[in-house]
Amino acid sequence: MTHMLSAQAPRRKRGDGFWRKTWAVLIKEFIQLRRDRVSFGMIIMLPLMQLMLFGYAINTNPRDLPTAVLFQEHNDLTRSILAALQNTRYFKITEFPQNEVELDKLLASGKVLFAIEIPANFERAVRRGDKPSMWVAADATDPVAAGSAIGALGVAIQTALAHDRAVPDAKPQMPFEIRSHARYNPAGQTQLNIVPGLVGTILTMTMLVFTALSVTREIERGTMETLLSMPITPIEIMLGKIVPYVFVGFVQASLIITIGVFLFGVPIIGNLAVLAALSTLFIASNLATGYTFSTVAQNQLQAMQMTLMYFLPNILLSGFMFPFAGMPVWAQWIGEALPLTHYLRIVRAIMLKGSSVYDLHYDAAAMFVLMLVTMAVAIMRFRRTLD
Image (tube, rainbow, N blue to C red; front, top):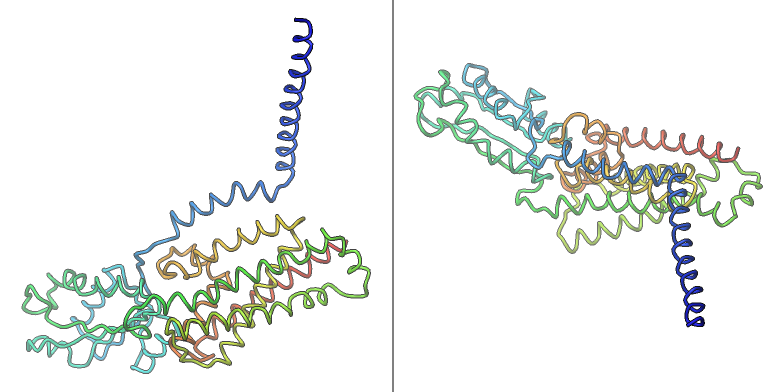
């Protein structure tokens, strides 16, 4: 009996030691988590960001889409049609071009998503019962945004004009026809929208990851001291780390575009040289952003967390997954500060519309400014690292 009791005593001590050690490790992990402010912030901010963006910013049924209207005549009927268009809440009249050439340029440049033309002698034809046509051209590079608005156009205008005195002889049917045409993607194929967008999305993710780990990897491996002891400036270090990945980005972009053309039938109507030059600008902007993350993060885990935090709004607010024009104004302002937003417009416009540099000057200038800002921040942050 004495022997059995003496054998159980150490066993209880070993059990007590197991839980005590486990508890000690648990407490240590909580302390480390509390000290790692970046990781703790990600735990709080990531679900909050997802909830806010999906709850308030994302709208799969976009409204107030920018629209240009060309009136070949001005009278009570055309004014009633204009009011009916605005009352549908699908269209927001932002441009009044003077001729068809200006109307086409507005649609090709992406300033408007819809171009509406009311021809001359329209009211006279309506009163004679000839049932004239009102022309509607839609930018179908985003088939989701264009499809819902075109589908509701006829019924919405008919309802709005049902009791309008400017419309003679009110009948159950419309006194004129609405002829719609989906430009740049007449069949509404989602591949023509998704594949060009994947070029920018994949480049964003990979370029951020490559450079976000660059400085932190040097610190963790202990090679940063050797690098800093060399007679080299922060901007030289940044360019030396960024330039090789520009070529990597070219390889990735070329691979995606080639597969898109031969496998999914995506056309390339525009100039490839323009696409290559603006892609270089976009790649450099993302590399500079990732390099900035690497100067802020203390280790590779934090760098990856920052990359994920930055990548989420890029996916949701750039127009890649959801129509950009359907987002609230505050979400569009955030989206305008993201390089991916401008690059998606550029790559889709060049590949599907054949747009020129002049048509894309706003988005190209915006990407250039964002690249300069991120590079300046990266250099200043690296100098603080040196101190």
